[in-house]
Amino acid sequence: MLMKTLVVYYSRTGKTRYVAERISEKLGAEIEEIIDLKNRRGALGFIIAGYDATRGKDTMIAKPQKSPKDFDLIIIGTPVWNGRPTPAVRTYLKNSDLNRKKVAVFCTNEGRDGEKAIARLKALLPNDVCVSSMVMTRPLKNKVETQEKISAWISSLHTAPQ
Image (cartoon, rainbow, N blue to C red; front, top):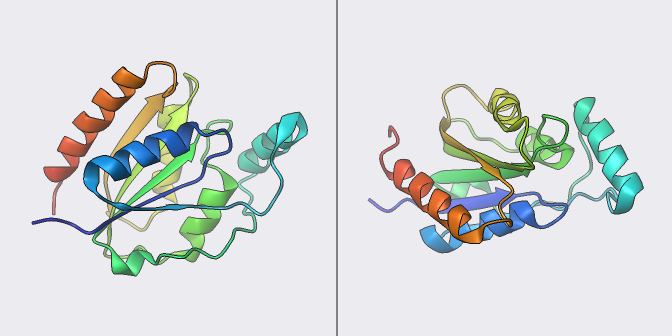
């Protein structure tokens, strides 16, 4: 059975966007970027972003165009900010009804705190909806390796518990 899938992601630098786009392409899934309305560009934006993530703050995001209720599987991607998911992803999850949905999560990082961020991301989800998770370290460094890891993860999604 083919599941109708939505890939939702936030990306400050493009790394998480790259992974989300590859996942969407391979699954033939719809995709939506979470737009943080707070300016997080540049060095100051980077510092404020880490501080906001550490404090578990929410943020203002643009109204999503697609509703999770219209999909069987929702894949959510976030960069790791100080061992945590981004405020934009926190806000998206807080505002989305994911009860009785299948959810898979992934994060991108530069080599540390990926598993911590995944655990914190899963804690934001309703009980028992997360069917799979993936940490993608330095996804733009070796795109062939990134593609292979994404393909393997997608294969595991097809065998995830229904």
